[in-house]
Image 1 (cartoon, rainbow, N blue to C red):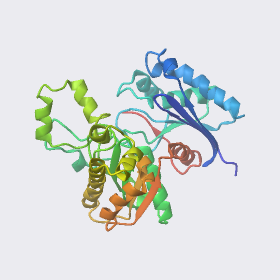
Image 2 (image 1 turned 180 degrees about the horizontal axis):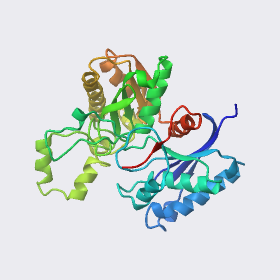
Image 3 (image 1 turned 45 degrees about the vertical axis):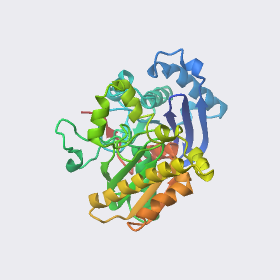
Image 4 (image 1 turned 90 degrees about the vertical axis):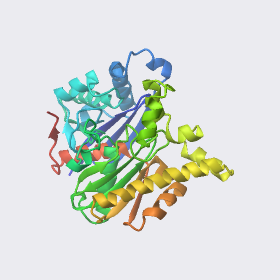
Length: 359
């Protein structure tokens, strides 16, 4: 059987990752990095559409890959209204909302747009997005906060969490839909999710910085002290938002978001760096343990993934506190390109039916 040929597209703020797959086997990959001065010519992310499109086609030519030989195109999903997990066929409503940035401005909004443009030019080939950050499968209890005006939201590293959960389930000889897992994605933001039979029934909102503090996010804070600080006159709304997301966590304490730099300082005897780093691991472990209750004490495995999972030191600090719960699976990094290709492949092979984005 001939494996479908799939082009995966993952736009970032100053780059676009593209990878060509035959089935789930990667043939080639490239990260296009753009000069900041070039990007300044555009008024926003969406206005970069044609520029990035031409750059992708240039790469295809350089790798000897003809557009018409690609069977399907898959883009990183952007900010949409909350939707269940899965692979979604790109449709007009999705494109309209991505172009308008209806739910927020983010480079990933270009993922569906670029995939659709290429698919159309290739002869109206199938095009998809897979498990965007707005995947929402929370149980009803998880949505309720103690403040009726505020409902908890599901925004997290859905693509990598789902992909690694499937990988661990396969290693256990089970289907993902048969497992009870806790997945901790450790990157610039940290998200920890409780996966119950194929659904993420509870997870911290990693975009807003809820949950453990991370290299760049403040995490959950003492509410009373936070409110007092917000009304102290020490900062504006915009400044406060930056303190919570982008300038929080390791950045706020140590002036860096690089875990490798923190470990270097610890090795040189920096006592403060060691305490803060230990505290971040402590909060990750504590959050993992919280989800033991969500899953009623029955956990098949704990997955630790993301860029910080490359650090044996940090992983050890977390696992020594939670290894009593369940077997630990370590998957460093976040192979989003493979996860995108696998999502498209499940539809192309009939394993999964493409979902329709709608209200």
